[in-house]
Amino acid sequence: MREKVTWHEQRRRSPVDADVTDVESTKTPARRRSGGGRARLGRPLAWGVLIIIMIASLFPVYWALRTALSNNTAIIQDTDNLLPPEFTTFNFERVLTDQSSLSPEERVEFRADVAAVGGNDTDFNIWDPIKNSVITATLITVGQVFFCAMSAYAFARLKFKGREAVFTVFLSALMVPPIFALIPNLLLIRDMEIDLGIFAIDMGWLPFADEKSGWTSTYPGLVAPYILMTPFAIFFLRQFFIGISKEVEEAAVLDGAGHTRRFFQVILPMAAAPIFTLALITYVNSWNEFLWPFTAGKNLEVITVALNDFRAQTPGTTRPDWSGLMTATFIAGAPILALFAVLGRKVVDSIQFSGIK
Image (cartoon, rainbow, N blue to C red; front, side, top):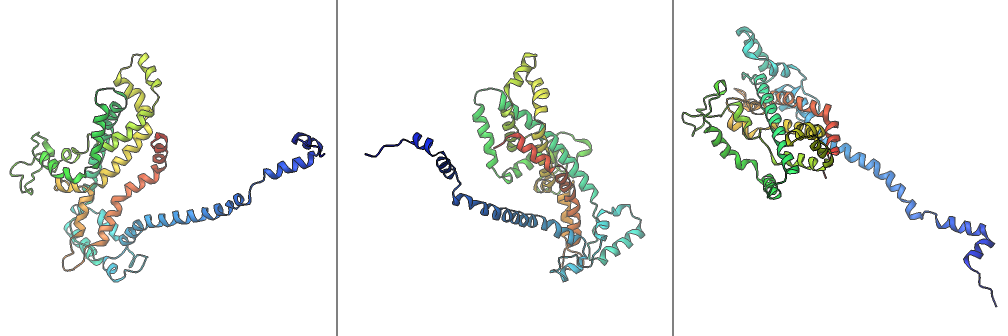
């Protein structure tokens, strides 16, 4: 009769064979090893897709620069060339030149040079619109970030009846298109009767304004709809405030700190990264705003509205001043591009640090 051998006895009798069996059992299947080839193929493919997306994103910026460095007449005749036709830098000179500071003789010579490159001879001054854009964007950014931070702290830390319901209703405003509030806001700004002194400008161009213009074409009127708060900004900061440990505030409470002191001395310093990100996003959105300044600030033009001057056809021709328009557009967008180039990495890091999912 054959003797039955247990696994332990077999291992003691042939340890070498047992070890070989164990090693073979731990080998990686061939199917799993073949995944390395796909990984090596996927990395170049991913880089290729990213490069294509990057080129598609940056090409409009290059095309604006190419048009700005071209003769306006040659643009129509040479549309297939990727390089500037009849290269010239005079477009930047004429856009940046304030014609009001020129003498009559210099102005005649200047307009002759503008006509030589096929440009529009409009009295365009880019510095006043840039100044107006800087003032309005700065006021909106400072006010919106400050008030939204306080509102977000209230929704994150203060306990009151119906807090979640109020926050849900407040967030529902994200689904309302801004165009719906355009006319009500314009009527509200028009009916403002507070004396603004040097900011008041006659608004006779509005058909329903009559003799009263209110805050139209004033800095307070341009920033009023945005300076207090927006649902996105409050949601953005609230999510970060919720993630801050309550033990930090409890330690401040033991030191006798109230809500105001805790907000300014504890919460705001810890929320510097997301607040910086929100400020940058708000500033860019305010700088790019067009519809509201166009409607409520016709006599106080920001840069996005002032660019419309180049769309008018040059007298005696049938074409707009594309070179001047692209030059002014490139100059108007240069500060924003510089901000993202210098601070873009910090924005990404702060969003990751905020822990928003």
